[in-house]
Every structure is written in C-alpha cells, then in structure tokens.
Image (cartoon, rainbow, N blue to C red; front, side):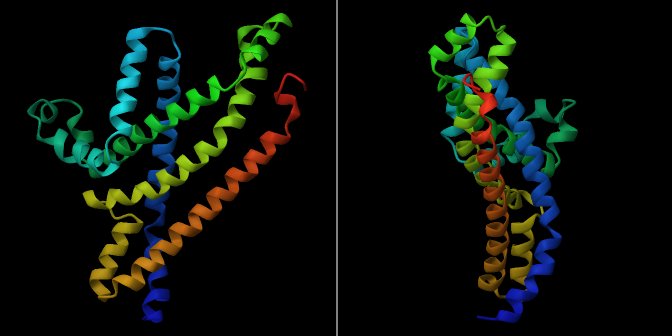
Length: 231
C-alpha cells in the first residue's frame, strides 16, 4: 500500500468534487419535479395518462442506469432527426446528456416513492378533514402532505444516496467528475488501488453527511405535531 499516493490523491480528486455535486444537485432537483408530475399522473384517475406514466416508470426501473446514460449520449446522437433538430446542441454535450439520464432515472424511482407516500395516508384521515370543513388545499397541506412526507423521507433519502453514487457513471461519457478524475490519476500513478480507495473514501464521506442531513430532517418532521390532524 502506497500511503503517499493514497493521501496525495485527495487534493486532485477533491478538485473534481464540484462537478459531482453539481450533477447530483441538478439531476435530483429536476428529477423531483418530474417525479411529482409522474406521481400525479399515476393518481389522476385518467387511464391513458396513468398508463403512460406507468410504462415510463416500468421501463426506467427495469433497465440499468448505465444503459440509459449510453442511450441518451450515444443512441440518440445517431438519429438524423435528432441531429437536425433544435435539441441537437443539447444532446451533443456529454454533460447535458448525463444530467438528462440521471434526472429521468431518479424521476422514475422518486415518483413511486411519492405515490406510495400519498397512498399511505389513511382514507379515514381525509374523510375526517372533510367533515371538519377543510378545503382540498387545506386537506393536502395539513393532513395529506405531512403524513405522506413522513412516509416518503426514509425512502427518498436512500434515493438521494443512490443518485449521488450514480453520478460516477458520468465518467463513462468523458465527464471528469470524481470517478473520472480517479481514473485519470490511477493511469498516471499506476496505483489504482490507492487512488480508488481515496475516491471511495470521499464518496463515503459525502454519503455520511447526506444520511445525517436526512435523519435530521426526519426527526424534525416526526416531532412536528402540527402537521397532523391531531395537532
């Protein structure tokens, strides 16, 4: 074990950390917005809309993220219709393709988490809110959303961690994020074990911080008695 290489790798690897965090934050944000729309479509009661949303979620969850990254970056770029469209300036950029693939992936998983959280709210709670004269907006704000949030947070926290690790696949399409920088450094030092151990330590540290933040949020939500009807 070359400890000098291990410890000396951190400054170089950390220089690529902003790209990793940027990919994670943007894709998670875009994915969440799309997940809300997909969950709404699944729960809309409109069969055609629900079927389309279900098909999308089924395909994305049933295929590897790496294959999705390759499909967006390499596959769509082979289509003449794409190359001749106004979208080509976006899809010819590896960074944009990585964001699209990551966002579409987390949206599928996130939509199921959101849908499950909303369905977990007991029907009796909603009926009781109606009996108290609460409007649909008030019912959602004071009854449905708080209870759904408590059910969603643990699973969504896991999804955030998975997506943070999933950004490493962006290195397969030439993006120099944390894993991409590690591959370059390993080829330069001929010490892949030491370099990738250092990269793994950084990912582990990020996930520990993220997990801690999610747990703090969970605790705060659980203590917020005003969210539920009994408050």
